[in-house]
Length: 147
Ligand code: SF4
Ligand code: SF4
Image (cartoon, rainbow, N blue to C red; front, side):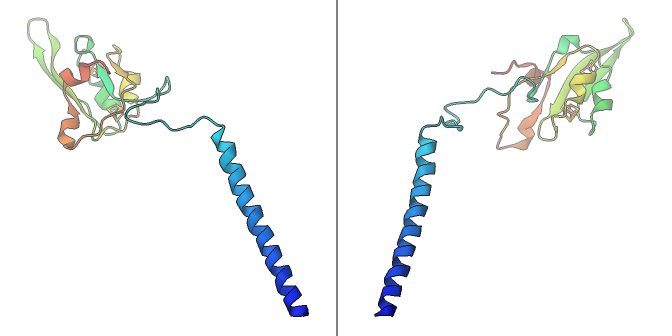
């Protein structure tokens, strides 16, 4: 008789503990139902990056003086500045400029030190590609305004 009563007592205690656990779980669930979701349905919805976000670099060909400061301050000497010396003006003439975003670490050094401010960081972050070579942006691709 005593053993039976002990079993009933244990069972009741376990049932009460299970009910408490379920109630706590449901309380968390109902609490979150009242909150706004923190995720968005990407790619149909997109969050706006913060003001200082360091995304794809924008380049203005006409402003560049081919000084190569961006190459020297880049931790991996990444920007490729292709220029020729114009014998008439005795100045460097820019031919091509490119940055490989498959290698760039988006540190922003080149943007910070460029003396003519022809480089800037945009909020563009969608740089995924099937072919890594397509991430090597020439001056035309770098000059595109972010969408
Ligand atoms: S630092 Fe600026 S101006 Fe000089 S080569 Fe680089 S992009 Fe051109
Ligand atoms: S952002 Fe940094 S890593 Fe990328 S090109 Fe500029 S200096 Fe080099």
